Image 1 (tube, rainbow, N blue to C red):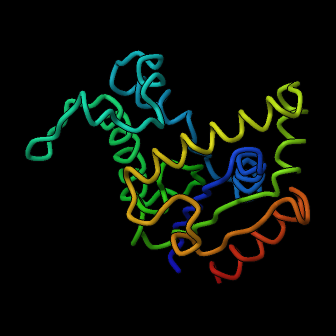
Image 2: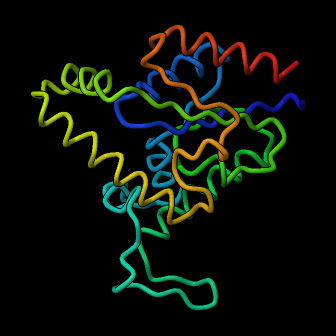
Length: 197
């Protein structure tokens, strides 16, 4: 494997995937790219980040937009492509990083040094986590999780051949509810170290 290391982490909402990504980025001393990509894109291009955030991780409206010869009038599609290009440029420059979501397992497919994961969790554990994090009751937390995952699924499936969460799209899928966040991180790091060897 090359010296370049790119760790792509897809995740179910409430699985702790983002926290896991942060811990892995810290362990390997790598930058973490998530929704903060939009801040960097806005800064580099002189755009309003709030406008970009409005269309982030949303599926384009097929009735209001069209694509002709690769050109589109869909703001959702354009914002997605800005992020995909950002990741491709970082990878092409030889940079190492951890990325959460952004269809990165597909966008960066074929990049030497890419390792892909998907973090899932038991419904009860995810619900407890979101109840605690957002001070919600059980019902509201369950509805919130379902809506977040439905949105991620629509977005991902609009840009990727394999469906969101399909284990064939990732090297390793792991249920963080079984061993907890820290043990999940440990196992993932063991896998990363084995792949780097």
